[in-house]
Amino acid sequence: MSIKTLNLLLILLYINVTFSQNIEKDSIQVEIDSLIKKYNYKRSKEAFNVYQYLLKKSKEINYEKGLLQTYTNLVSYHGWEKNLDSVLHYSNLSSKIEMTEENRRLKLMSLNGEGQIFDFYFGLTERALESYIEYYKHYEAKNEKDKRELYTLKYALANSYLSKKQYDKTIEILNNCLKDSTYLHNSLKYRMLSLLGNVYQVKKMPEKSIPLNEKALNIAITDKVPLHYILAAKQSITYDYYLEKDYKKALDSLLAIKDKLASIVPQAESVNYDYLSIYYEGLGNTKKAIYYLNKTIETTPRYKKLPDLYKRLIEYYTKTNQKELILKTYKAKQKVIDSIRGMEQKAFINYYDNRLSLIDLEKAQKKSILEHKILENKNEKQQDYITKLLVFAGFLILVIILIVLYKKYDKSEEKVKQLEENKTELLKNHIKVRESELSALIIAHNNKRNKLGEIKETLSEAIKNNSKDAILKSEKKLFTFIKNFSVDDFFSKRIESQYPGIVHQLQSRHEELSSTDIKHCIFVKLGLSLKESAELLNVTTGTVKTARNRAKTKIKLPEGVSLKSYLDTIKMGDITL
Image (cartoon, rainbow, N blue to C red; front, side, top):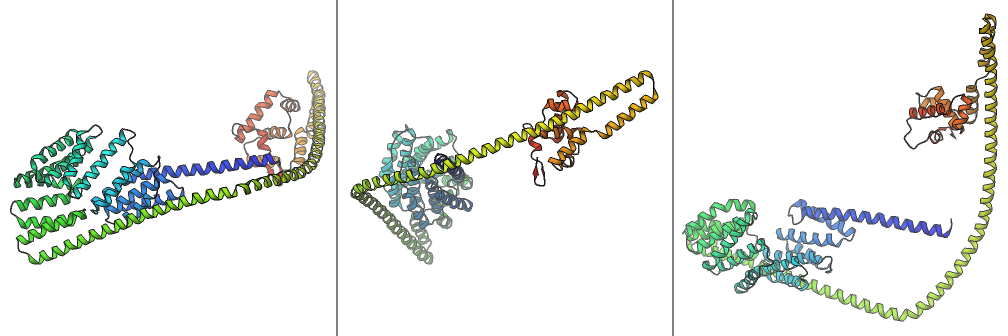
């Protein structure tokens, strides 16, 4: 094998392996994308197991998109489960994936999602703002979709300022967004109107909250959005009735929708209980107000809201003079406050530790790059010397290899030449044997035909003269001829001597083959042409061709497989046809 051939084989092998690996990687990516699409932002145990599987597969093929999307889903899942440590863990892993043009959109979605998780589920508004600021730092309005995302960010910021009780700042942000509503889709406009109405409700200004909530309800009705949008708007309007001191209307309106809303959006149940508590208190039924306020505390997903709820519960217990419950509630309130402070401390320590580790990593990378450049400068001369030495050594090795290959090639050429001569000689001998065999067959056949001609003439003469004795004599000669001279016996002996067992093999494999079919198969094996076979059988070439096709049909050979090639595959012991 020449060097060129060897190199070509190695290149083809490399291309094949690389191609196979790329196909496998692409198939895994398709599986990951499909599972992410199916389980995106799901919160079931099954979804959690799928997320773990996605992490494993994404790491195996270093699929950054799969990792980033799965980290985002795990942050959302653990946020729902109130597991701050896990949220911080996966948030840190997500932050270590660098922002690139390809993953920019996913990174922004991840930062926005983290901000909402920290604010909504844990009341960590400051930590949420850090995520929003990081989002804004990388924001680029390249197209209309990007501009819409900016308004989504501003909505999240307004929510954070509302949590911080900076109501004027919240109103400013939302009003600016609603004035320039070019890129506001109705769903986001609905949420902004609802949030702005909520701010004015907190400020006890129903004259401003009522028209905002009615606009939100109108959008929900006319835009054919999901039913819970309509129910949520009606829920908010019930609080406007309360602010106008129409407590009965507020209560009746809420009772009419609360069950349906809670069945669609389980999170709304806590708000329902909170409003019921307030409305019953407005009607003077403090006992029911206490009951529903306790239900609110049990079901609220927002840590930050708990201190205010406990504070109101203490007021209700004070009004009903339940001193033991006042003390118990106060302790629960302090425990929640301490918990929130602990979470804030943990979140910020974790956040800044992560920032510091990223800074250290950047410094290490810069130091490594600088050291690499210095090393490159120092080794430049050495590399030139080594390069020249390697070139010389390579040239010397190449010369030696060429000499060795030339000698081997020369010897190989002699061997190939000898083999070719031997092959030619064997072929000539084989042809001579075949010619001799064919000649013998033809002579035998001609003799048989001549003998039959003589018998025919004698028989014709006897019939013409109506001589019974002559007819019997001719019949006896014909019987003796048939008994002593059979082309089938001749060929059977010839085939069995060269290919022992062929007739038996054909009969055992294909019982439907007649003796005539087997005879034609034997002629094919011997390599006799249609013309040669026709002369031996004293028939036309068309008859031979039909007989061969019939044998092929009985053997049930598929199109494209010749009778000759099939016969060559049959084995008798160690002998192959």
